[in-house]
Length: 137
Image (spheres, rainbow, N blue to C red):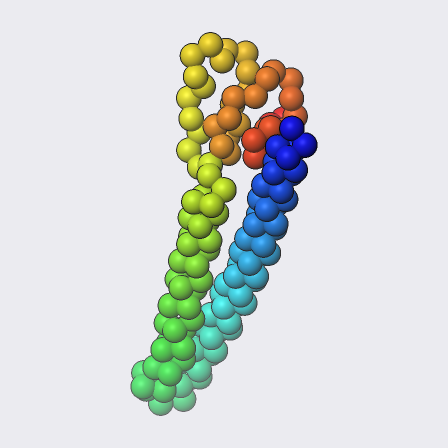
């Protein structure tokens, strides 16, 4: 029995560590995406200012804008890469920790809570899932 408790605690600590690690990595990626989006906004402003000034001087040449447009396109590509990394993190989390789609409660489980994370049927009036620790209410 003590060994079961120890193994259960060990599994829960592993889940918490993985969730924390994933959360931190995801937030790091989201911060990078926000920086890229800010850079894109600045580059668009620069290209607009440059284009307008060239137009004012009757020297409009799209070739002078191309490097800015290429830099904007590269930043959008980097954002797509980062969004793909977030999806991969979420998928890895689902594979390791389980969860995802909510399962239908088994017959006779009426009145219990079904965990939205792992589908475990929990007794009524509990705050957290006994299997994965997700907050139920």
